[in-house]
Length: 132
Figure (cartoon, rainbow, N blue to C red):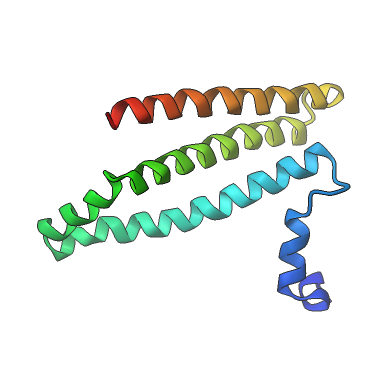
């Protein structure tokens, strides 16, 4: 019987996000997993966004105004942050799972987080500059 059946969905999902007593690698995996789930949900939202073109250009333009607002700015920053975290931590996972730099995986994980932080900051600056 699978773990999902034994403990229930709420407990199983909660165990993904538990941080206390977990290693940095486990926390990074949970962050990458959560970012992936949110990005998958965003993909569906994006498909709905694009499909508003079928309702007419005026509907699409009205929908785009939301993304030009402060709420849209926050949404862009969160989306960028999730993309960077998912990408850098995914690259870390790919390298470690391939067996490369296994003995230096703690340094590699720190480098992945440092790179993520750098690209997040650069992206936020660009987003803020572009939004005026």
